[in-house]
Length: 151
Image 1 (cartoon, rainbow, N blue to C red):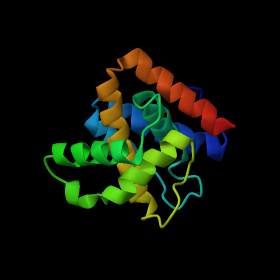
Image 2 (image 1 turned 90 degrees about the vertical axis):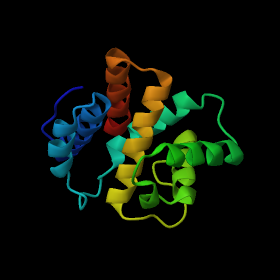
Image 3 (image 1 turned 180 degrees about the vertical axis):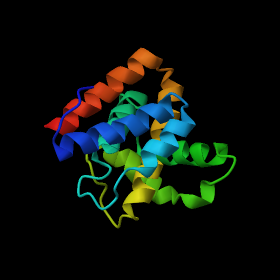
């Protein structure tokens, strides 16, 4: 991942640092870096969205039907020890469907940007774990997300 001096590059780098910390189970770094993100930035969530889309397309390489996505969301929510009530299942399903299509923004009403980025972060973590991506593959995912958001 390259460091740039532009505000867009800094925002992308900061978000990917947050995602990287989460994937590495660096929860202190995740909390510190995540708290520094600015949800009022018009590009807020773009880099995490790119990483999420990559993970979703790797997790479902052949795509997924609405029923498959719904089952995945139900399994995901059922696996949470706490916090499942924070996520709307229909919204999570739309996020996954949009990620599979490569859409940055899912159609329909969007919750606040923090809720969207939070959902993408936890879903990305789960997908990366399911895929068994180690540190090198995680860095590749983050580098690919950086390339996508730089365009």
